[in-house]
Amino acid sequence: MTKPAAEAPVYVPRTLTDAAMRAVHALGRPVVTGGEDPPERAALLRDAAGAAAVVCTVTERIDAEFLQAAGPALRVVSNTAVGYDNIDVPAATERGVRVCNTPGVLDGATADLAMALLLAAARRVTEGDRFLRGRPEWVWGPQMLLGLDLSAGATLGIVGYGRIGQAVARRARAFDMTVVATPTRDHPEGSTDADGTAFLPLDRLLERSDAVSVHVPLTDRTRGLIDADALARMPAHAVLVNTARGGIVDEHALAEALHAGRLGAAALDVFDGEPAVNPELLGAPRLVMTPHIGSAGRHTRDRMGLLAVANAAAVLRGEEPRAPVN
Ligand code: DGY
Image (cartoon, rainbow, N blue to C red; front, side):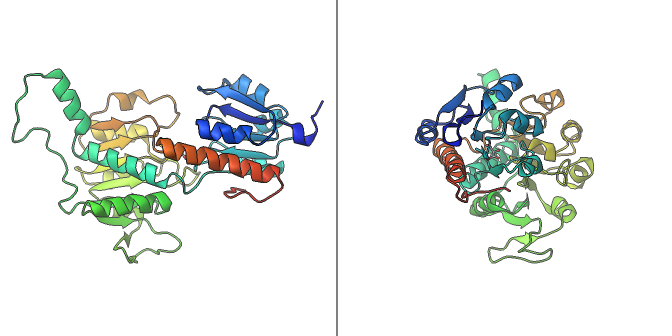
């Protein structure tokens, strides 16, 4: 039997930070929670049944089957993430279910990680770490582990000049890098903004950049955007960084380019088919990898969780959420 609307629970498939979980309980509704790990699909569908709100993460696939399993009480799916490629937004819209996300609160954390990965890949930090652990008897060498100098006039190409891309640009400028970016609605091709960022079509950006950092969402248009052709345009010393979504980079082409020495180095925080990592990448040289931790600052994760809960609460009260997707 369907519960009266005010009693329909909030479903939180994965335990969020303490602050976010306190906010969930403060909604004054029954709460159904999963654990630390992603629920099995069957448990996800079972526990969603009858929920009025779902506060989920990027690991839950929210599709027509999920929405059907949740049932008619469902009013909002609030993703604890800025990206929402895990959610079938048209299917939710068709059912009158609001979808929300968490833009703005994770820009700094994600940009910090993009810079950390850029520095690590350019200056061979993880290689140095492995080298040292395997050779306690090492000596300093004039040509040991030479890498790309970012602050000697290197150009950073930013693919996707939204909030996170701009946060990366600010950090890169502090490293004396020249910044170029793909055009936006406000910054047409051929223009230069007040900070000196020049806006170039993707092909020219790839050819001109010593390092490229990806900050576009995953959509039908961006899937495979950095493919074999795109990689071939990059200089052989260049570094590729991806903290956006794995599907934007063709992982097979990337592994081949690294093996063939056609790309200087790469650093990935995101993978196509997460949580699996393509074995071709595991064997690729000069590749730094982290497990999708772009937003994993303690403060940032609190802010993401609190915004996701606030979005859900607003919809449940019949108000406009702060960060609606549909
Ligand atoms: C996002 O917010 O989209 C991140 O990838 C999740 O950490």
